[in-house]
Every structure is written in C-alpha cells, then in structure tokens.
Image 1 (cartoon, rainbow, N blue to C red):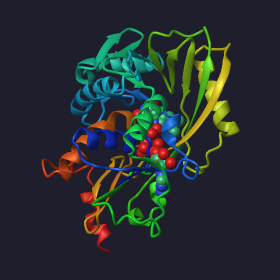
Image 2 (image 1 turned 180 degrees about the vertical axis):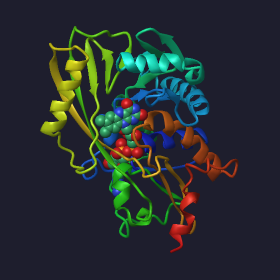
Image 3 (image 1 turned 180 degrees about the horizontal axis):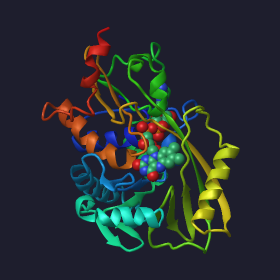
Image 4 (image 1 turned 120 degrees about the vertical axis):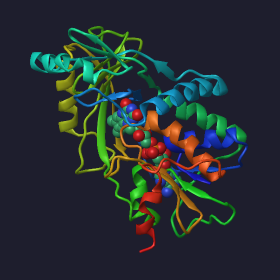
Length: 325
Ligand SMILES: Cc1cc2nc3c(=O)[nH]c(=O)nc-3n(C[C@H](O)[C@H](O)[C@H](O)COP(=O)(O)OP(=O)(O)OC[C@H]3O[C@@H](n4cnc5c(N)ncnc54)[C@H](O)[C@@H]3O)c2cc1C
C-alpha cells in the first residue's frame, strides 16, 4: 500500500507499476492537504551563491530526463518542460567575485555571460497536471482509493508493505516520530503579464517561471513557524516585492498557492523500510521533490527487490539506532 498521492507517492506508484508489483494507493486530500499542487516544479542542477552542482546532480539529472520523458509517453500527456534558466549576478561586486573564480567554480551545467550565468539541464514539471493525469490512470487500473490511513485504526493486514508518502503530514505519524523533519511553508503567486520573457526561467532571489499563454509562477517564500494551508499577508507582500525586483509592474493575479515542503534537518530524504516492521517511508524531499523523487523511487524499488541499496545519505538506515530506543 502506498499512503499518499502527492508527487512522492505518485512517482513511487509508477515505478511499482513498471515492475509489475501489485499495489493500492490511498489518498485523503480533504483531511491532509497536498503540497505538491503548490510546487513551482522547477528542476535546477545548480545551487547556492557559489553556483555549485546540487547533490548527486549527474546521476539525478540523467535519471530525471529519461523518467519524465517516458512518463509523458506512458500517460500520453504533456507536463515536462526542459527550459533554460538564467541567474543574473546579484550585483557588480558578486559578478567580479564569481568571474575572478570562474575557473575553480565552473561546471558542466554553466554557461557564463558578463551579466550572469545560464544553467543547462534546467526546466520545470507541471506537477498538478502530472498528478491529475496519474490519478486518472491509476483510477482506471482500479488501484486508487480516496481513503485516509489512520495509524492504529486502518487495517493493513492485506498488504506485505505499507509505504508512507505523506509529505509533511508524516511528522505526525507515530511510526516516524524519531525522524527530524524541518517543514517549511511556501507561497507562490500565479500571474499573467506581458512584461516578462516567456523563453526562460529567471532565478534571482526567487523565480519567475513562464508556464505558457503569458502566465507565470512567481515564488517562493519560506517560513518555519506556521503550517496552515492559508496564504498570508506577509507572503503575498514578499511575492509582490519579488515581482517588482523582476521589473514586472503590470500583471493580473490568477491564483495564490500554498504548500508545506517536507524538508528535513539534515537536508536529505527519508527513504526505506522500518528496521522491525513492514512499514516504509518515502519522504523528506524538501524543496527539490521534482528532481530527487524519481531517482530515489528507482533506488527504493531496487532495494525492495534486493537488487541495490538506497544511497546511505538518503536511507533511513542512518536512523536505525533511534528506532530501537
Ligand atoms: C511554494 C512551494 C514551491 C515549491 N517549488 C518547488 C520547485 O520549484 N521544485 C521542486 O522540486 N520542489 C518544489 N517544492 C517542493 C515540492 O512541492 C515537494 O518536494 C513535493 O511536492 C513533496 O511531495 P510529497 O508527495 O512528499 O508531499 P505532498 O505533496 O504533501 O503529498 C502528500 C500526500 O499524502 C496524502 N496523505 C498524507 N497523509 C495521509 C494519510 N494518513 N492518509 C491518506 N493520505 C494522506 C496527502 O493528502 C497528500 O496527497 C515547492 C513547495 C512549495 C510549498
């Protein structure tokens, strides 16, 4: 059983289906809101002020491109959009600092210009669309159920494994209470404007992501003190400030979006089976679910089949000493 049909549960289910492993998905959005629907959906192999490669970038980005392309064919739909991403230098000082160190900083994803760097192998996934198309697919297979899993109440005896893909709700599941989640609320604004360039993602202290027909997603905010599903005045103001910095002054607001990133204290996912029980976890993908989830779904299924082991930094084996307390 897979509990949760956010991006994590959905992509894990596609991997099980690929391997002809029988499964059911239980999901309950009315009681547990789905953060994946708020995601910008960006994948970007470069991070931080020093333009470093993201963790395991080579492996993760190679897998990501083949996975989403194949999923589009499988679902006969379109939700994967590779697109150049531009990171302007923050200011003249930063430009000089980075350009002086170009030789030591440079990597295969960067294309240097005088006003900033272009990042290759970036783009975005229309996550809500992927979830919708997948839900339809799994409903037609008869394996999708609108059902809440309640710890200690829901009967899981018909299943060999129950894998929890509950997003930030996982931190309330007593099975995983020893794991250090560090959830981060995020807000995003969908707008329409003709004052931006639709051919690339702009990334400077936030992002401006073109999603077609003069529509853009503007994001995103971070806060760690409150985890409700409502948008906030401060979040809204911050997003409008970002738009001003992107020199977008005339726009129509289409939608406010809110989600909670299931981030973790050590900034690595929680992947694997409980050391003593038939329960597993596939969670903790933080602000990088789009790029991390496909790669680790493949590793997790490989581990369940005895073919490989999940990377030690992502595996919940790193917390085995806590489960036995
Ligand atoms: C504003 C914002 C912007 C973001 N932008 C990006 C981005 O640009 N790129 C990127 O890679 N990531 C981004 N993210 C992060 C990304 O959204 C997450 O990494 C990812 O969506 C997490 O997916 P998930 O499936 O783990 O969790 P969720 O999407 O929260 O899914 C959990 C699911 O489990 C269900 N559920 C939970 N508990 C139960 C239960 N007991 N019984 C039944 N069902 C249950 C819920 O209903 C839900 O459907 C962003 C996040 C936010 C908030």
